[in-house]
Length: 83
Image (cartoon, rainbow, N blue to C red; front, side):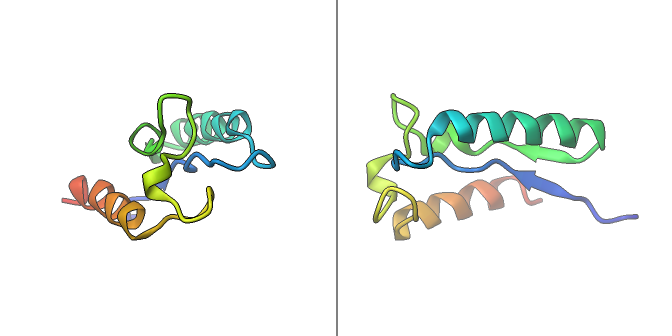
């Protein structure tokens, strides 16, 4: 009961088979569900997307998985609000 649950958004992709419209829809659903349950939702999507809404190319190895720079940004985002 004292633990705080935090749900993070799904990150964008650069893969056509996993469209970012689908990711945005999923994130909207997550945001609604967390609000209904008084759970904190953190949207990391803006920090990871480029001007077209795709995963920034400098943060990925293959359009889906993060590279070390991407993981560093993810860590910064999580730690920035951890305390």
